[in-house]
Length: 161
Image: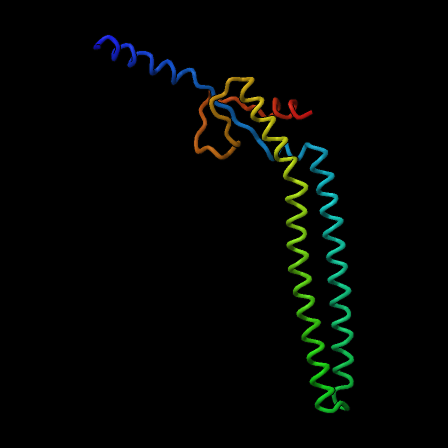
């Protein structure tokens, strides 16, 4: 029994030494992928479209507000109330369009980026298995990395291509 305990105590440090750690810079990998550039282009186009839609709605609101300002002195109380309600409704529509646009942009970003992120994670896992790594950390996420940590960013990039 004592020999078994002694043997386990002697083998434990060896298994700790057998662990292999890597680090990866996913930002660098993502920036180098053509899929990310394509997704960013689509997002910029959609964002520009949403900005143009909002701008036209704001221009319409400004035009109607100017009309109201010019004609308010000659309007009766009912007409004033109706015009003010119309302006408030239009302002609310603009706010709702802005919120809907932000949600649509977020949804589209997730839709475009999810397969790319999955591809990168799959490549990291493949490099980890092939290299017998115990852990692969995001570069900069670990508080301390010793000198025996291997940067596997290039290997992951090669795996994706």
